[in-house]
Image (cartoon, rainbow, N blue to C red; front, side):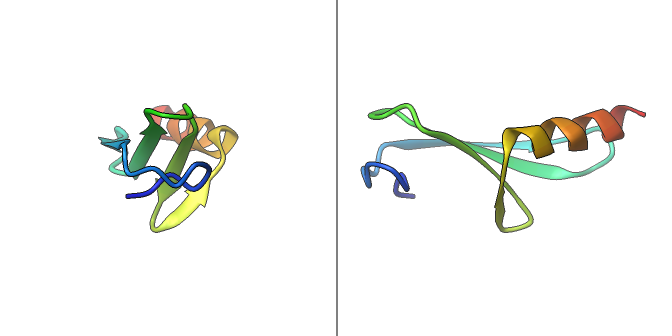
Length: 58
């Protein structure tokens, strides 16, 4: 995986599963500290991740 900002290959990926079964992938670049999230193959904003987590807890 390449960072979309600096294009370096030094990216960490963390797969997470919310209590309701929703799967989210978190990515972080070690070089430029860019962070992004993916849900069902689409990049999503942090606000959307938080909303999914909030709904999963309800």
